[in-house]
Image (cartoon, rainbow, N blue to C red):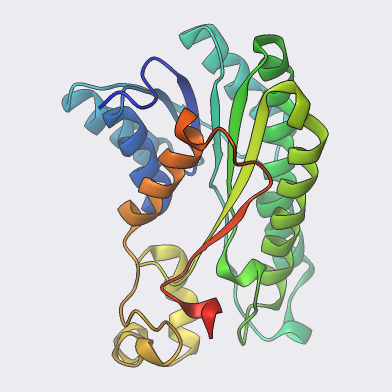
Length: 254
């Protein structure tokens, strides 16, 4: 216990799925967690669950596609916890469909949240980390940032951008104590994937044949991704920066 003890952590998209699991896992290891989500009820629920378990957490409602809201939660974290040591850029959307039918709104929303939101949060956090001389950023991309699938062209483009953003930030700040790494989850059992599953015949059909594309033969669990995020955020990963790790049950090994 205590792998991130007393470190100030921001987790975006902390209200559900992988973000919720990461927020809880960081708190279990002693982190002071700001749970950021566009949904105030789910952000508050995650923070409350952490507090009930004896951890330290607060909730903040924000749309990460709006730079002023991003700066507000970064400032709130520093004011509340005295620093910003760990940033988990997890919030995102997946709006699947046939590419030539994608609306401007679908393209804009996907890029504004997945790409610009990750950029905004990193840009706002880095000056605080520079003043401290250290910090860890973990970006949650997707296996679809490495390989694509039917109906995910826009989503894949956005997640591929996060992979390259990770590498760029890592190189820019490697000598200044700031590490930036990226996780590319495979199919994990979270609501963000359900609309895509519907296009592929439904979640039951998909899970019944999941070993055809995810060799481990099952969907991942959010907590499995949270374990990896904790490691990358902790000092145990002090030699890792610019790494892009596929946590995909063997999908990209084929």
